[in-house]
Image 1 (cartoon, rainbow, N blue to C red):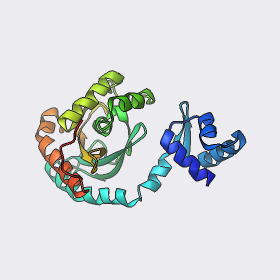
Image 2: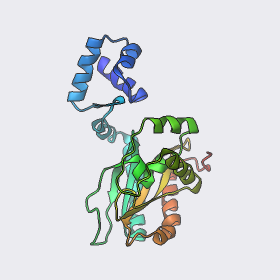
Image 3: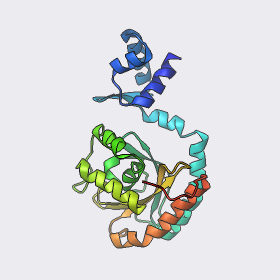
Image 4: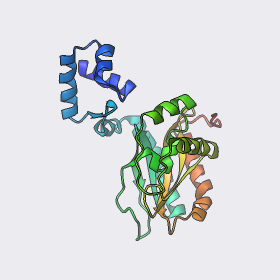
Length: 247
């Protein structure tokens, strides 16, 4: 019970330091140390300079929860439809702390692709989906989030200025889609649209990704409406209430 209480506390407060956990859970330092050591060794939590947080191993367990399966099932058919329109890789992504994770993909029918095997994680500041997955946050929430995120530079075009990134988050929210121009890979572009839950919160994205020589900025403009249509249909299939999201 103490271990699960600790996991729930970390989930609600991550990243969190040991003294905060002791105080919040009423644990002794020795007891907490044993629990942290066990959960870290098993791979369920990890420690950074900012404190303890849940690991991707818990995401892998959580991805079997029915709502995730419902999301995958709702998205899969439309992802295939979108691939036939875009002829590029299609990804379904969610946010985990400061990383964007692809939980489903449909590969491009092209014989030449830059990423033949899905890259499952992307720094939040380096991809189109990252901008959208933060777009439901209030100004205060977004500021607090960015205060605790270390930006990772993948290319010379990666957005490293937090104020500029915040502007792009708000711009993406207003447009209903986000783009990524050579920000994650030197020859890779992407465009993403948000998926909403019944509370008009962004819970995932659907993204088109491909080589910049083929998925050019002009080509991405042509794909905006098909992408947004597929995203809206997936959201509706997940019982989205069809209201226009308020910001």
